[in-house]
Length: 199
Length: 330
Image (tube, rainbow over all chains, first blue to last red; front, side, top):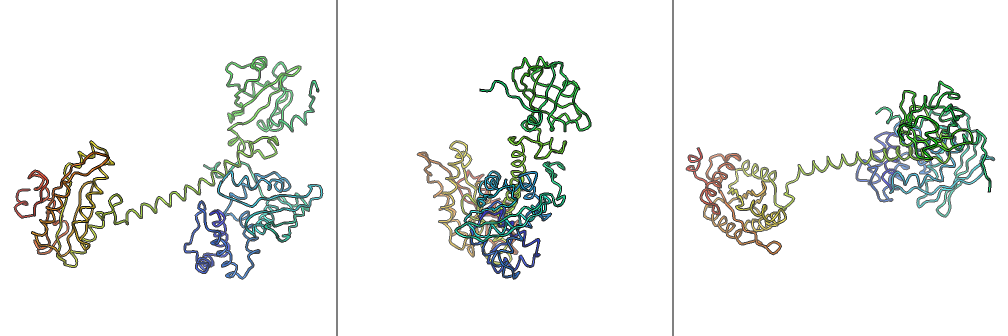
């Protein structure tokens, strides 16, 4: 699994539950080091060992942990860049949903080694009800997407109902009901990169 | 086939949010919504185009007729609104004027900040937003890579500083030699110390190249390891300088035998790419028995004096340190 994914998991556990929890996870998972490098590749087994160890340590299911991680990746002030990159998908939550079809290719443009699952949005904008199909080698990515979509909906100020429909045959499906596009004002977003503007 | 395509202003704005329609006299008749954002406090309608935009290229483009004469050539403009934003544009003639379509080009990176542009300000087919996305994603990825490189660089330097091995020859390095020498002195061990300097090595390097020089150093390392015991230390302490430490060996006769053998073996020509490299060695020796309390710096200095005595004698020989040499050096 790519270092970016491993590093995300590490930062999520570290920032949310504290260094003590992360140290315990490092020990029980037999990781052998304390920091993942974002730009290196790691054995898949390591990622799952960390995830399992964290689930046991925190007495949560891995699904819940992955969902919380998805929310963390968009809403934590410590990781601003992913939220910004996702907001490039569109001016509204509806446009953003449709941009998810390109997410795999977009990720690859930025980091060629990063292989995210293929996403496919089904359904019509008129009804406001969609199904997001995630196809990839690893089960659980759908749960990350549920958390991430919820946080992105809040970011755009949209009101949505999300439900993980389970998985089968390497495919996970999420139902999305877009109840209101502008329920709140959402968070500010400007195309201009604040970091670049400061520099 | 349709002869003419008629577009409502709203359709034109959807397709080209950065368009301008000019009348023949150069007055602005219509603007796309994104062009309007360049002058947020002014309505451009009725103003003279050349008062609001400066055409940099082609040179001397100052009238609508000049743009028409340019026949679809790409125009380079600057916006006269104080920000000096650069634009690219292309124009086509209309029945009674000119339609210009513009784009930010590379200045889009600054423009989004200055004019607070959103995704909706660009045409649906415009790649500007993709470019901005890519720029930001790549910068983030680059930053991570740079951090990794810096850490790896730091780790490499730390590892090199801690290393005890000379990377070319696999012999011990000066750091290792200092360490062992210190230990011998502290533990009051008896030992012999030899400084070796290769003769004519520079000539090999200069005439036959560094590859030949490296090959010679590897052969020299082999000889030195051969002629010493496991408990002795062989260190490369400079380009062509070596130090040998003989553990519990202070018998001058034996040490001189070893020095003689080393010189003899080094004088055997070393083959490299069909040529022969000829070198020799000058050696200076001292032993811990000569000192009441052996001192690392003093012993290395004395062996060095003996080594220079060998060089003075015409090279390719060995010398044992005596107090005489000390007198001569002064």
